[in-house]
Length: 124
Image 1 (tube, rainbow, N blue to C red):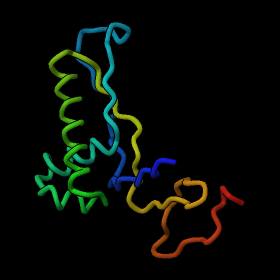
Image 2 (cartoon, rainbow, N blue to C red; image 1 turned 120 degrees about the vertical axis):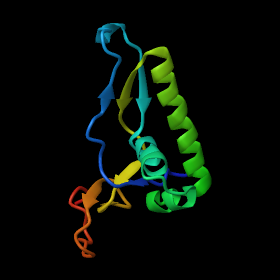
Image 3 (cartoon, rainbow, N blue to C red; image 1 turned 90 degrees about the vertical axis):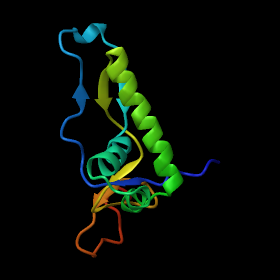
Image 4 (cartoon, rainbow, N blue to C red; image 1 turned 45 degrees about the vertical axis):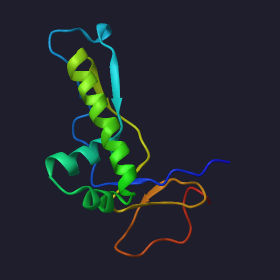
């Protein structure tokens, strides 16, 4: 059995989740999917200009994992720009800051100021 993915911490969901070239109808466009954790990595590294070890710490991942995420995200963004493809932000293994996952069912729920319910409402 493979090791389960550790969710990457994301500060918030992206406001905009779809970008496309102007003047080309949607049915004619190919789509590139960028995951939410890839957007967060790009945001921290390129927009906030943090060092890689700081970005990795904020996302709760190893620096080598962050490097792989950045390479993947930059390739996808470049492909969308150069080849005129639509860019969709969707999916990935992530957890929003303030959420925690149930160890049994892995559903996400909000973390209330240091106090959590021992029983997951989805598992009951």
